[in-house]
Image (cartoon, rainbow, N blue to C red):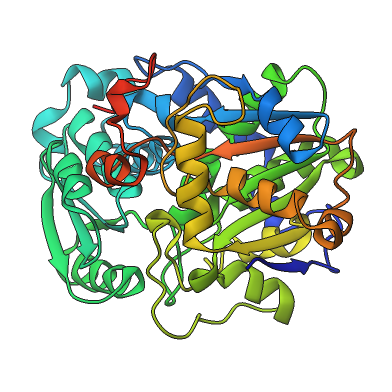
Length: 400
C-alpha cells in the first residue's frame, strides 16, 4: 500500500515568511562556515542506472549522506551548526569574538564548558548536537524515547552527551527536552518548533541543511525532473525544496516527500491545508521519520514548494534496503539506513503503479534524485534487516 497526495497549493514561489528563512545571506553563512570545518567534503552522488531501468525512467542519482563528517547522516549539517551559532552568541555577549577555528582549538574551552545544549532525537539529530557540543567545548544533554535503538543511544553517548531515555514517542521527548531546557537555562537545539517553541533554532538547523542543494547543483550532470526527500518533521524537505525554488524558481524539479504510513504528518498537512498531529502510534521501522507533527517553521515552505507526498509501508523500506545493499538492480552495493532508503522504496513503488506513475509525471525521460539521508546509523538493526554487516559492503565504512 502507498498513499499519495498532490499539493494543489504548490507554486514554487516562496512566501514572505518562508523567504525570510531561506535568504541568500543565511545560506552563504551556513555554507561557508560548514565548508571550513575539518573533514568537510561534499557527500557522494552515485548514479544508479540499474534502479533507473527497474523504474522505467531515464536516470537515478543517489545523494549519499552516510559519509557526512563520519556521523552517518545529513543531520551533521544542522544540529552542530546551530550549536556553533548559539555558542558564538553567548561568547559575544561576554565580549569574546570567537570563530569556529578558535573553538575547535580550545581557545575558549573554559567559558564554553559552562554551556549545555539540549535536544530530543530519534538518533541522528542528537548525534550531531553531541558532536558539535564536544567539538566546540560545550556539554550536551540528549533526550531519547523508548523506541530509540541501543546502538543509536551508544553512538550519541560516545560524544560525551548525558543521555535521558523517556517513555512515549518522539514528540513526547521533544516536549520533555523543551521543558527541562527552560527550567535549567540550557540551550534548546530543536529541529522542530512543534509544541509552541521558538522557531529561531529550527531555522538555523534548516539553513545548515541547504548545503546539500549547493552540492547537488555542482554534482549533477543535468537538472533533475524529480527529487525524492525523506520527511520526519519536514526540516530537510523544507531545506531542499525551498532552496531549490529560491535558486531556480519555476524551473525547479518536482519535489516529492516520502514518509512512513504511520507517521504521515506532511502528507496530512498538504491534504488538509494545515498541519495537525497524527493520531495513534507513529513509531516506524523508518525510525528517524517517526514524527507525528510538522515543524511550524518548515510548514510555509512545504506548503509552497513540495508538489507531492507519498506514505509507504515499513516492508517497502526493508526490501529496498536489502536490495540496495545486495546490488539487486545491478548497481554497486550501497549502505543506506532505514530512513535513508525511503526515497528509493517510494520511487520503485510509484513507478510500478501505472496510475501513480502518471500522477507523478514519471516517464522514460525522467531524471530522479534520491536524498539518501543516512547510512547504517543503527548497525545492529541494519544487519538484522539485511543479513550482512555494514562493513561487509565493499567501500562502505561503518559510521564512527
